[in-house]
Length: 269
Ligand SMILES: Nc1ncnc2c1ncn2[C@@H]1O[C@H](COP(=O)(O)OP(=O)(O)OP(=O)(O)O)[C@@H](O)[C@H]1O
Image (cartoon, rainbow, N blue to C red; front, side, top):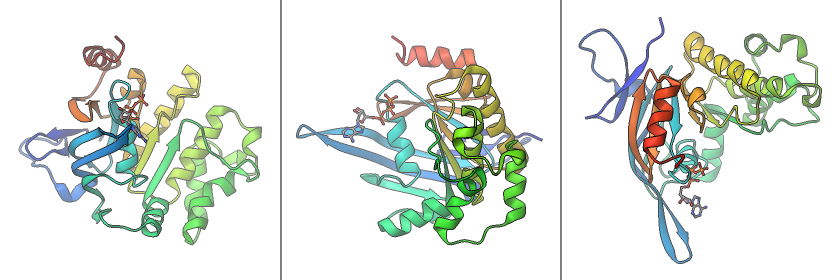
């Protein structure tokens, strides 16, 4: 059964929507941020891109992050995924704190525990689909589980294309390769940065359905930054950022409701 997370405001935790009386369970969080701030220096002044973000994302949930331009979405994604360091506060991937990790350990953690799906598919042109998909494991020095790889290729609908190069594939198929590559390490979290931004409407819907099925059928956790209310409507929960803070949350989001909230945040003024 598909369960949806909701936020426990007191604890700043997403918890699964279960029948009556269930409390949040922090140990089930795939991702936790505690009081995360990020300041950049610009022209001698500090810019606070994140301003005290506290939240937990339940395993097996799909979260969309939205907000007006400059609200801190990219900064959030970079800090949450260990691509950048917060100025203060803590980030946990599963039970692992990223606090104080040196670059080498952060890189290892990203390779083993986090999957990325970007707007530009970022595939290696000279490698086949199969080789692109197994690259994170090779870089992490981990053994390839061929059966898992075949299962993932089938899941993303590319079982017949394993020997093809990216240039021989459509945009949607290339994004499917990127999703397979993100799943190969069985990561704690897959982060998407506008994963459908470069695709036509129909193909975008197929990619979003695929991400949805990864959550529903394999219990994958997905956190996706998007500008598109329809894309956000595939998530269990939409988090709205404004001025580096969480400005709201919508569970069971509909595209119209999401668009309405974004309008109220001044996103399209
Ligand atoms: N490297 C940087 N140096 C200085 N300021 C930065 C840097 N990166 C981001 N900022 C500032 O931090 C704030 C948040 O930026 P961020 O890119 O996270 O927003 P965003 O919501 O992703 O925006 P967009 O939707 O336009 O991509 C903005 O004021 C931005 O100008």
